[in-house]
Length: 311
Image (cartoon, rainbow, N blue to C red; front, side, top):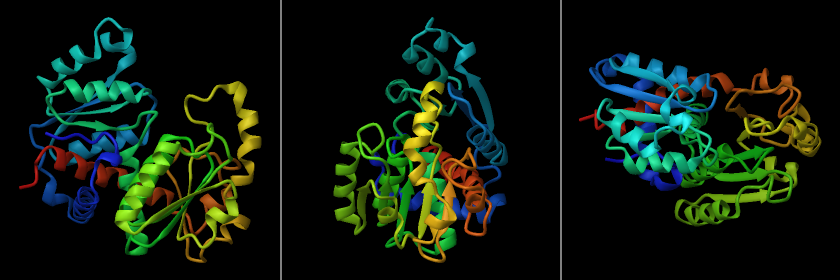
């Protein structure tokens, strides 16, 4: 039995296999319409969700299975009346696979430790691997390859999407450049950077962290950004964060430093006028909704892989 906790733990070969399966799932959905028949996915939610819930639930339904939405706010686990370990040991007796969207990564690790069925990380404060698998699928669809491409991420470098994007990108041989304000509160974690440098040596990719947005985006094939206001950011910090991140806003002017055929990505939700301008996200280079759609296909591939449903 294996889990999807972070792309740091997955080999390039494993990522490649899931991307290839996601491509086939997308092209031939009827081929998989009974692959999860009589199987149940438990979806544990602590954080708000749109794309995660809809894509996982629709995915299980389309593969002949069933999904249970379970919000921790109304549960013994969420109220602290039952330990995570007891809850997960119990749930494992009822369902075939579990996904969880949580605040604390340590809670997900505890779930994986005590589960007797596969566990999927649908987002924690540490990582967001399902999003990045969908992103890689979208990039490959548009560019025909991953290896050798330059991906520039601009904005908040100290977040789960950035870290997962770095792991996924460099493992697939991409050159990942992160443009973010200097400082531990805004730049990628030092341990993630060092791990990615090691992975890049094996893959032929590279990683660059810079406070200069132009250096980061220069000649990029892919330009990526994410919300400046993650769910955990207090309201009283928002104005200061906008001031800090505004030089990294992806505008048409900044996009001109990327390659002319560069694609623009945002994992959504997006705030026009903040991390990117409306001109960019609604323009011809944007693939944000193709990217969002691939959550369905990539997650189907993850479910099928972890469930050993493909013979």
